[in-house]
Length: 325
Length: 309
Image (cartoon, rainbow over the protein chains, first blue to last red):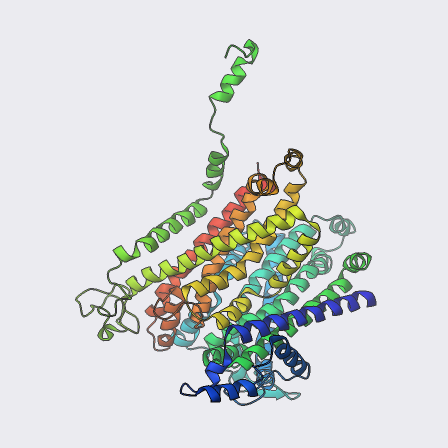
């Protein structure tokens, strides 16, 4: 187990290093930040001064080295717009995004697993067909369009739920959250459901496929022969075996949720990091863009690592294979 | 016929008189068993024709600033425009007739989706074939890159690219190609790895055919089925992704609005109940994506050798 974790940690560090290079090269070499920073009527001397101050006259590798060194110290530059450290700006918005992603993940699991298992146990029932057809729509409809339709229906036509912002924010253990008051909660419903749709469809598919496969296994037949009740078979024996793919995929999808929250946050004006990214792109605030990308990469690597480790705990075969190889 | 022994003659005749079972015909009859998939295919054909013919069948030219009048802005569906023409689906915020704007938008969305799909397919196919055919270190390096890219969500990669590249149809296509090629490469590698073990490749190698010839003329044709399925699905997701990016203000520029940009333009009017600016382009987008997915789903069933009867 220790060998396995150490190996994965080294791999993760390598990926972060490579991605930092890609992000740095992409954002800093393709565009010239000086054009944005210097006024249009600046003369050559002023331009050169800015270039020197920012260290842009140094060779690329040296610039990258400085970027890495500062990055390791948690400094990814200052926002051009807010004049604040970019990392701080993003960390400030992160709880809102994580809250949104967590709530939508919960919605996907709590609704998706029962629906999927039902569809897997009774594949011919009309309700199962309806569930599967619904999941096809969940996959193929663009998130932003569904979000707009939800706003039109629930906020404009019916007027049941608010469609923008985060509402009242309460504090639990010092972390701001919308979940403590009804008003805050009503703000998170629409965006969370919108963000959950894709994963809901995914969980339904996985749970259905898992249930159909597991039901034919010998150990289920054996459990039946032992005289266990149907509910015990489904809730314990089937569930346990469905959970492996669900945990893996959802773990990986949590990163996807954080990335896709860019869209949902823009539609619902949810003040998270995704909206900050879009705002920064529109304002050409490069340090914030770079910082966002680096933080997202880091998050992704951590999530992949955690999923790998969890997976090896749930399914010992994976671990053994990896150590042997 | 004289060469064939007499007792075999009826059998030969039977074989000759039954040309029905060509692979193409079997494919068509398998496909048409599902009427919804047929409907999906018809819808795609109609949409494609509409998109191609847009400049000739659209009532107005939405890019021609001389004819677009701000006086016509935000007309409800069915109201008359200044020119006396009826705007059957209303007009948008700058006075463009929605029918025309949608036809042109469809044209852009489809060409970006299909164009990026074809280029990504070509790159992915070559990379995947090379990985599968040469194996070893080449394969390991290529697949490591593919895995790394696929561990990041498509939208994030596309966002990064468009932030650095800027707006424009060419840049959008580049971003979508970069996002998609890895899916094709992975698919074709998986198929080609299986095909590579078969005897016909071995015999081609023994005949000392060139590597290019073996890869393109022997390996590739036998890997087509999964490529077609993944390709169909990828075009749908490319159209959807382009719409999402345009909605976020990246991707296509304001002067050439795709469906996603039209929806974004209408979004600001949604709160005041002017639903038509967002809804109708949205429905067009939806119908396109869902039909392509329906066709792709059916193709997957029909072309899947495991389900073949």
